[in-house]
Image (cartoon, rainbow, N blue to C red; front, side, top):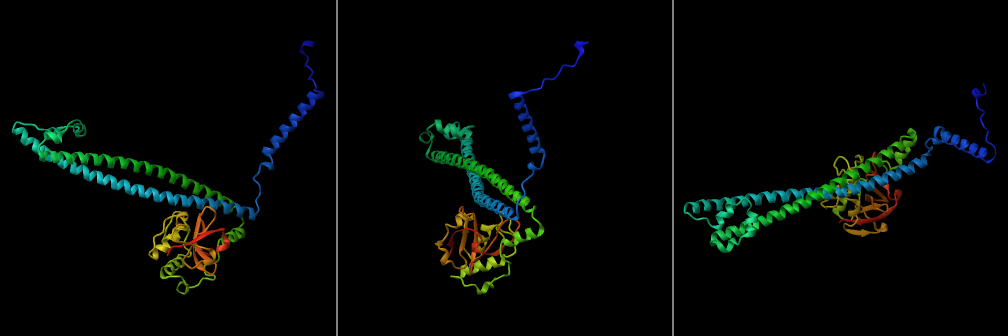
Length: 345
């Protein structure tokens, strides 16, 4: 019978018991931390939401300007690649015509019983190798020598064009990958900002949206009354007023939607002045001016990374495309950290 008795459980005492109790409490606390309210997302105040959203939109705009700059590079590489390929095709056609002409000579010489070096070139499956290994110009007649020299030059030119096209293709592929990275970053930042904004009540959201700038009609002088330093600046300002209310869309240059540098580029294009695509390249255009010397039409830039730009319209105000989800609007210069200004014309 004794052999079937349930063994007594030993009770831990002393240091071992205290250690076991500590571990048990720690385990319970861990379970509570993951299962209980302590694991919930912290509640943000409207002011904290605003600060986080502003930071996300600034990061999104930085990524947008990088996207715009990369797109310019990609477009240039694509255009250059097309031009190089077209030129290589044209030169290849001319080369084939020259080889066909030598082929006609070959036929005549074959009927006459001779086969000179020009004929061998025309019939060779690899003219590049043949030309490399033979001194045809010295052994052929003057007419054939001139043709062969021209073919040799054309072959070298085609090889150069193809090498340059390969380089442009590599550049284009790299730019396309970079575009995808910037696009992903933009979408991630905008998505995060939207999720934060969704936490706000309707009145809080309306207050945040209104904070993005003055009402479009408030203190808005008629374009014809704007005093600009010259006709071009006046035309740029007039275009900006005409864009009020049009939506912000990253990567857009008008006429139906704009991002910040797309708006300023379009405004000055309407005035006959070509600006580069991005805010950080536009600041280097024209004459730099101080904040105290601003005149309507000047470009005004914000943030340390020059990631935002607007067009000054006088009275301490600018017209700009603020951020995703907003529209082109009139706003005070001191709404964002001022970084500099330039005067295109």
